[in-house]
Length: 82
Image (cartoon, rainbow, N blue to C red; front, side, top):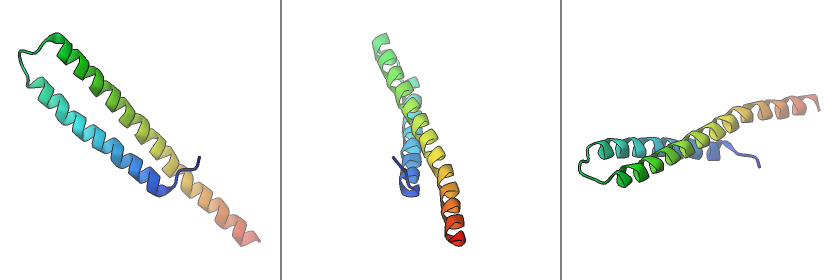
């Protein structure tokens, strides 16, 4: 599957959104007291998984973004030779 610049930009935006929202969530979780341990464990797992998803999305988007200019340069070279 080929990812265009618009989709790569969208994936970066989603990754940043996850990073920002879950960073706020971590700060809110740190500020809570008196909850059972299971509450903290469950939310810590959610935070780690979602930050992992954000990292994967950012890597995929970055690779797609970097791959596109090289492909367009090859197309321009081929069209000028023709």
